[in-house]
Structures are given as structure tokens and as C-alpha cells.
Amino acid sequence: MKDLDTNVLSVISPRPAESYKGNYGRVLTIGGNENFGGAIIMSTSAAVHAGAGLVTCATAPANLTALHSTVPEAMFVDYTDNEAVNNVLKSTTAIVLGPGLGTDETSKKIIANVFANVSEEQYLIIDGSAITLLAQEKDLQANLPQAHIIFTPHEMEWQRLSGIKIAQQTETANRVQQEKLGATVILKKHHTEIYAPNAETFRLPLGGPYMSTGGMGDTLTGIIAAFMGQFAKTNPQKALQAAVYTHSAIADQLSENAYVVLPTDIIGHLQKFMQEHSHENYRTKIGFN
Image (cartoon, rainbow, N blue to C red; front, top):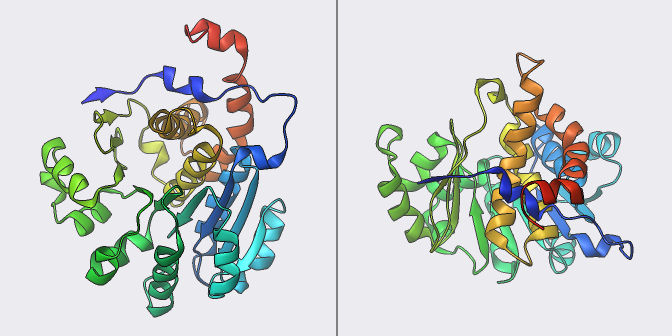
């Protein structure tokens, strides 16, 4: 297993002068029932602040006011309206599925609809409730779509999905189950691990207990979606690694003056961090140019 290093941030390239929002990816975030709207709002906000060109949030109508108050840049659709969701899905680059979604029958139908309509070239980031439902509902797991699937479980969610108990989640055991799924797995833990198909396993040398706060993983999904929308054309794996690295690197910086780093703190510092790491002098410093 190899440690990720700061060179992955070289994917955060300066934006050309001739740009418009369509150049930077279209993200669709899906989740947030009436009780857990904050999860999908944080994911949506992270995608916006990490530079995604267009972001739409498919969530429960009860969350609309909070969504527009927090992220006025994002658009809204009712996550139970399959036609509306599918219309957005057609032109989407990256989809986040699961934060705050819940595990009831409505949630299952939402996941089934996405699985039936996602395309092979799209990035599908499966998190939270969607992972739990996949572990519970074997028919859903049997119908995983042909797409670039990225699972983002914490250790207990990975235990449910893979069947590997936390104490036995070794690199070898995790790799076997990841290959069975045919997807990338980002195992969130102290020193998060990235298992990608036909690739080396990477470990994140950043992060700490100050990140142990609800919503941290939801924020990560939004950053991943935005990075895949902007930077994946050249090197998808490096774009994914850079997203994971960025999330924890910002938290590390903030922890110097904070006992606990909140997900919204990370979101608030994304734009500055990405600007600093897109400068040509920084790219020269790390030997990219």
C-alpha cells in the first residue's frame, strides 16, 4: 500500500480565460429525506464550492427552503419525481447517491430508478444510506449499473456491504471484495484507503480525530463529484485521489486552530485551497511543469 502525496493536487489546474459553466461538469446530488436534509445539502454545497459548473439537488420537498437558503447556486428537483430526476440525469457528469436518503421503500425506489437510468460514462458516487440499502437488498446489489461506480463507506458500512468485520478489514481482504463489486472503494477511516480496479492501493497520510463529526463523509462526496466533473478527463484516478486528499488537507490546516473541524468549515475553505493549488508557481514548485 502506497501513501498518497501532495503531487495529486497538480490536477487542480488554472482555468482558461475562455470558460463557461458547462466546462466544469454537471453534478446531481440525490438524498436527504425529511429528517436528514443536512446531509445532502452539505454534499451539494461542497460540490458548488469545489467548482462544479452546474449542480442540482434531488431531495425531499421539505428541504427546499433550507437548500436555497444555504446553496442558492444549486437547482432543485423532487427526488420522488422520476421524470424530473431522469431529465437532469441525462446530462450529468457525476451523481452523488445516498447522503441522508434513508432506508425505507421510497429510498429503495429512488436508488432503483437511478440504477436503471445512469449511463456507462457517468461517475456514480454511492454513499451512506444507499450503501446500507445495497447491503440489505440483494436485488439492488445484483443490479449495479454499468458506470464508473465509487463507494465511499466508513468501516461499519463496509462491513455491511462486504461482509468483512472491521477487525478483519485487511488490504488483501478488502481488495478481494472490491474486485467482486467491480467498483472503486474509498474506505473512510484513520488514514483512508482507496481501492480502485486494476490499480495500486493508496492510503491517505492525512486526517485525524478532529474530523470525527457528522456530515464529514457527505462533504467528501460533493468534493469528489466536483473533481470528477472538472479534472477526470485526463486522469480519473488522480482526480479522485486529489479530491480525497483535498478534503483532509483542508481539515489538517484548520485543526491547527480548532479542536473540532466541521464539514461546513471545510466547505468554506475549498475555494481558497483550490486557488492556492492551481497557481503556476505552486505547480512549478512541486515539479509539475
